[in-house]
Image 1 (cartoon, helix red, strand yellow):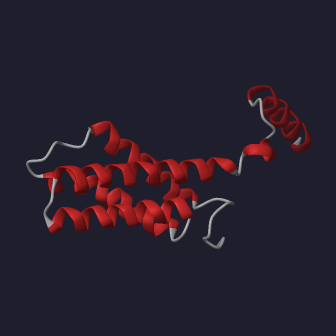
Image 2: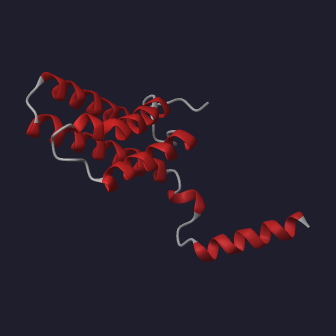
Image 3: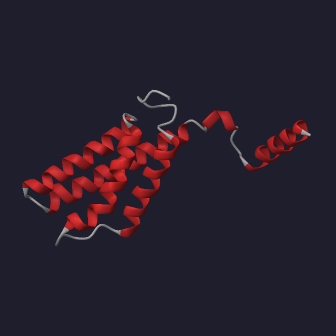
Length: 130
């Protein structure tokens, strides 16, 4: 019975997936980490260096950029993912009178960061597998 299930699932995945499972699958976490980090760094750059000149906004920008760099490198990924979720949740309150951060951008950061929190950094990261 087990062999029949294995054969069925392998046939199903070979039809639905145009790439072999072991070929490009490890790159998925890398792409997710890098894109989430780029979005965080871009958000920090626009918020801290273009709109506000106060020291508070610059410090917030450095912190968000640091979380983005940690995600790109895959260093302390799950801790950085928790920080990214928290930063995305409080980003609107921290904006004050500045231009609000788009809701879709915050949802993107939260979704990517929660996925990395659950799955870990992936194969191409500085984090050691647990």
